[in-house]
Image (cartoon, rainbow, N blue to C red; front, top):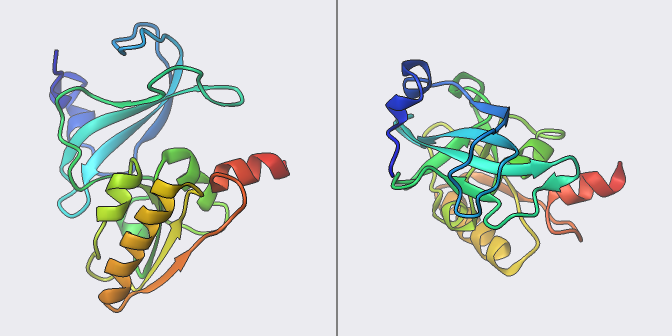
Length: 182
């Protein structure tokens, strides 16, 4: 069953500021039947800010929950050009940091803000230049899909004359690096 965003409350459906919340989910509609805590992010269109979906990442105290899939948007909702804004648009002035997932974007925010999560490698690779952004920092996941996506994104932005920085680490992502250092 597809759930329209408007069923969640008018406040969420019209929300234009960043939204990532921690929620204890009591009932679940995941294919895995998982019940437990989750990060929930509002997915909005990168350019229009129109709400597209909600994105859930099932978690446990030490990271992602051991459930497949560990991340899910609402069923039957388009994620095309979607981002999860972790900072309001007013904070995005000359520079922006981006990462595949919410956890990595929050880790990037330890050194660089504002930051957005782009959902996955496919969306990162397609994320094109936005007006007014002069500098882009990409938190690159250290796997084949993440490296390819970061290169595709960097090429688009650099081709538009934007200064681009791409992170590198031995671990899979910045979140893993920070967790190991803690």
